[in-house]
Picture (cartoon, helix red, strand yellow):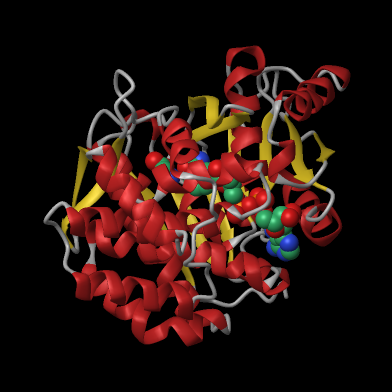
Length: 373
Ligand code: NAD
Ligand code: GLY
């Protein structure tokens, strides 16, 4: 699992003083070189402390290997192990990180290492943004979704019962270390969830990549190493470019939320954790494409193509029947909403995203069609 093959790729994210590298390869997690030149000087020639933030599932799989790789660089390496699940992306769990930092006397030179999927990454990043008004952190994503999306770009957050990712901060990591070997232990359903965010990059930016995903979807599902390397690297390149243009989502970055307006409503409406984030985004992309088609954007042939690819990726394409009214209520809490008006990422054409409001009547039609009603 931890075979360190020579093939290692690096994607740079250009944010001026907050620029950083994304390392991608097999074995990078356990390679001390991946963490070189990271820790700040803790003063008087001392080394800084490291705190690994992980969860009960990932801890027994990868925390010891990370601990050993960090040991040469840090004065001490400690660990806090959170409960696992989207339902724990909340205040009480966030406080477990602060409790650990304070109880262990961690100062502002302490580096947090987020070891896990997007839930751990978003929470550890938010804790890093807040603790002593900001300490450095490193993303070590171990799910496909986190490697292609959540670990890159500095969005950190916890959920609120009324809305997904509503409490958070923009806070960039010092580095992202994507070990493709960690994907070997991922449940098949989680691989599919990650594929949803990979597929997303096609319609929003690069239809040649969408063609490539269609041609390699079976290899990706089978976790073929070369296919995963290409998919993770290209996804990180696209995300790095978007974030480099618009770090704080004043415009362009909103395209990364294709499928998320419907998707977040599915997650919040069903209760966090019933559908995986990637599953909700996948189905949400299909709903957004259907809405775009009704508004004169992408055509029926593309909608059918997207549906087919999502199915081949093992993702659900029938939306949960929450009721149109409930969908609308939940979508009004979306961060893109302005003055209560829901704004969707739609497609003028495949590869040409736009952010627009849509008539409620059309949204209701899409919900009815997508829920199989
Ligand atoms: P997750 O963090 O819940 O991880 C999925 C499951 O896989 C968990 O049970 C986890 O413990 C387990 N796991 C993690 N690594 C494993 C491994 N290598 N082997 C076996 N099991 C492993 O879910 P996710 O899909 O990684 O992330 C979803 C979260 O990311 C959501 O909360 C979403 O809002 C957030 N997100 C954030 C951004 C962002 O820009 N910050 C972008 C997309 C998604
Ligand atoms: N996943 C949305 C973003 O990073 O902006």
